[in-house]
Image (cartoon, rainbow, N blue to C red; front, side):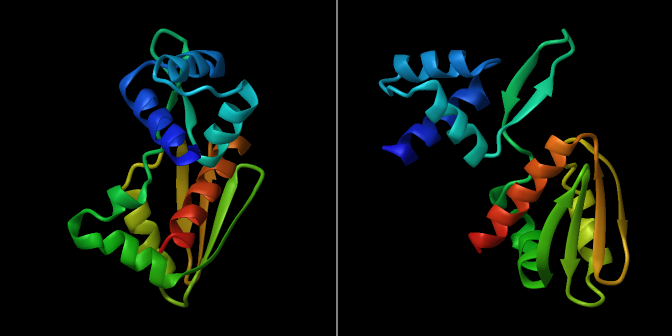
Amino acid sequence: MKNKRQEMILKLVAENEVTTQEELCEALRLHGFEAAQATVSRDIKELALIKTSEENGKSRYALPQLKKQAMDENGGLIFKIISDSVKAIDHASNIVVIKCAAGMAQAICSKLDSTNIHSVVGTIAGDDTIFILMRTERDAERLSIELTNILENR
């Protein structure tokens, strides 16, 4: 039931302008899923959904841009490089730190830069470490969770 509900959440967010958890609960009800606001809140966190700002000043839920499916394009090169070389992912404040195999940080950083990750201010890569400066602490936490989930589902 949880998987089907979460699949519906992804579909609803991708196809509609969902601005609040209450709206999402109501949309789920209309599609035959009864879920409390607390459940929807947990689903949003597990799915690593983000809030984006629209031109009209409103914010809405959106799918993260960095997904394994997107990285599987072009023969899965991005996903393969990341999954084979990344050793650890962490965040502090609004910075995400990625520890890599020696000599791989610049290649991984270049591939991540090409995915146009939402809310990235800039990246710096050394030999085995990447720093990604995010706009907010919440953005850093979201990206850290998203990358960790991708790696855990290799």
